[in-house]
Amino acid sequence: MKFSTDRILTTHTGSLPRPPALTRLYTDAAAGESVDADEFERTAWNSVDEIVRRQTGAGLDIINNGEQTREAFFLYVRNRVSGLGGSWNRPPQSDVERYPVFKERNRAANAGKVAISGRENVPKAIGPVHYLSTDAIEAECTGFTDVLRGHDGKYAEAFMTAPSPGILATSILNEYYDSMEAYLAALGTALRNEYEAIVRNGYILQVDSPDLGLERHVTFHGRPLREFLDFAEMVIAAINAALVNIPRDRVRLHVCWGNGETPHDGDVPLRDILPVIRKANVGGFVLPFANGRHAYEYKHFAEMPLDDDQVLVAGVIDTLTNIIEHPETVADRLVRVAQAVGDPSRVLGGTDCGFDTSAGAGRVASDVVWAKLASLSEGARIASRQLFGNWRG
Image (tube, rainbow, N blue to C red):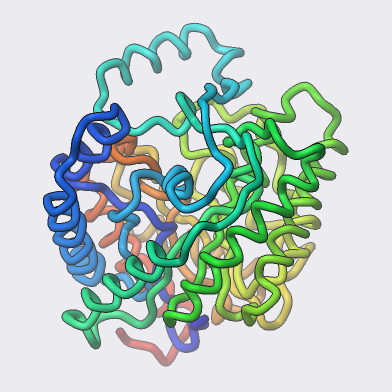
């Protein structure tokens, strides 16, 4: 995993806008309609090529496939593991329920939207969970490698994402295992195949674990904080077990409080969960510091410092607003994070979350997304001139 050796490197959190034609194919398939496999392959991989081109054009250093070959950041796993069936609807977020006027406005704004839902008609675990085959992830990695060959020299590093056992355990209702710990262990064992395949193919692995923040105001709403922290400890243990064969400098962990424009006033503070998160055997953390609820929390890294071999990907771009951050604002945010960390070489510029975590669900217009990412790159250049005096990029 690259450090910002002489300038602040830039990256993002994973999902990028899917074109309408690809989103429609995903939603048609989810609705049970017939989708032509050749048309899907062609549309998805053309989109990956375009996504790579747009990332390098925006000046990003560490890029990915934009999750174009998946319908959502965790739901795609339902086609790769056994033991799933039936469906259920995830509980609502407590911050939405507390504000009925907002809830109704939000419902009306999303009515009729063509998108994959990460909350409705989600499968359940009704039998033993096992990873079926590495064919799909190997094909995804190989296809991405083929695309990247046409962009050699235009980026510094590439990554791929995979969900944590925790987000699967809380999203895919357990009706088989006798405990959460057993369910998490089974999911971790299954995901180990995916994690190792990504690294084996030469990519940085990003483990997406919004559960370590989000589930405090969903699954664990109204319950003692200690119960949520115990869950978080079990998730980290399952992640570490799944990463047993992977060097930690090939893994970064993304944690957030959900990618919704909601009040977020029930979010668990980072200060409460950071001691648990830091037990993850990873080389970096990806955290949101651009949104109005968590923008101050970078300060905790002055009190609870990173290990010497770890980096912090600081979210300095909000993925829920169409306001394009000014490069000077981005630079200011990066400088403050670097000062708290105490070493600018261990800070990278990033986004708070993905821009399209489920196909069609993104709130930011695609043309604005690319303008925001270009501003991220320019802001990183400004910050680099302040933090690395001998750099003149």
